[in-house]
Image (cartoon, rainbow, N blue to C red; front, side, top):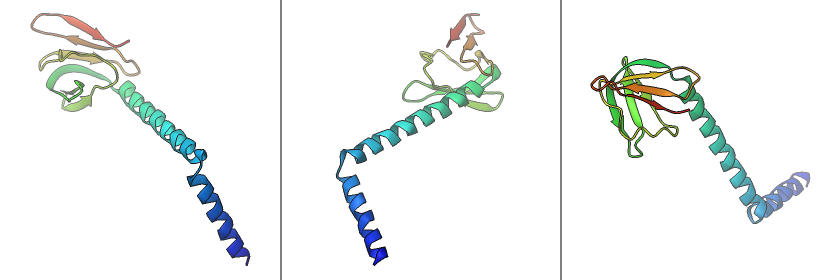
Amino acid sequence: MLLRDYMKAIMNFLKLLFTSKLYIFICIFLFGIYLVLRHKREYDELVSYEFNGVVENVFYDEKGSPSVTINDTQFHLVGGWNFKHSIQIGDSIIKKKNELKIITIDPRTGEVEVFGY
């Protein structure tokens, strides 16, 4: 009898949960937590990048974010920089660890561009 009452209470709670605004609030709250954690993970990855070398390969995705290969290591540079497709093979590129500033130097013209903050 106790088990039956317990199961009935659980079923009533689930029915209330799925038919109420509480369910919608919980879903929105959990989605918000997911977005914050995903953003933090991406930010931590970007900050941890450190490179100083010549761009061996560059590929731009559909959003215009470049993936560059430097010293046989690929880096996907997302996060708000607007490179305007200006990174080319042969450019020197510098990024220090724990900074969001990226410096590119075009060896053909000597032009130095600073991206980030």
